Length: 257
Ligand code: SF4
Image (cartoon, rainbow, N blue to C red; front, top):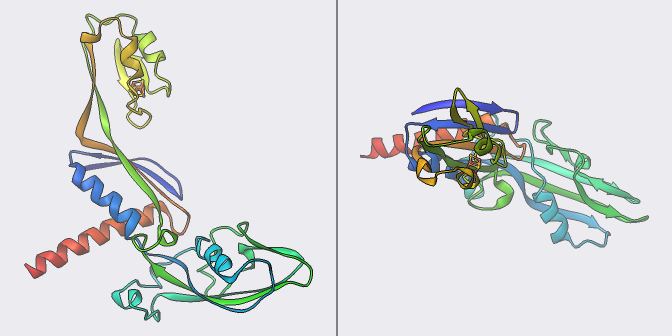
């Protein structure tokens, strides 16, 4: 398999996966979405809540705040899934009084590395005289158990193929201009396709003078793969973690066999 990084920022990674199979791209997608462990609030103890919001609402909102996750210091194991959080949790707390809007920046954590990805996420409003005082555990978990533990989203699409008979095709510029996302260019008398931009919309095939001279198709051995995290870790870290998890599963199967 050939892997090419097309673009990457902290939270988003676009790759070309060539000479491989849909099963490989799909294993990577599924592992990324469902199995990369991230921190999220699990158990909340309320000592005081005189706001208009019930405890359950506040707990749910806290749980949906994405937290920076450090997989070098915290380890997800079966023990963690079974309620032993000694290796996989950090303590958080909130103690605020109204009038104010409580934001994610008001969350205090026992480990400065485990903190909300942004301080601007509103959690609740407190009116004069109202107070919220709580403690909670941020615990490593997996997206397959709850969306709050989902690191982000990943997806892939097949490469688009163009079969064109350039002796019969006329006005290539008009065909290229018909593409709504600018994926087609004319270069040296031929159509050049940007695989990342192409959405398989088929619009360009309506602008050819001879439909028999132009055919769009799929290359089922090559994929544009896009992975984006919510910010708990970088997209690169999450992809590498996904690859490691697939590798671990295969090694475990190999040793058992
Ligand atoms: S299929 Fe759609 S997106 Fe792709 S090149 Fe043709 S017009 Fe552009």
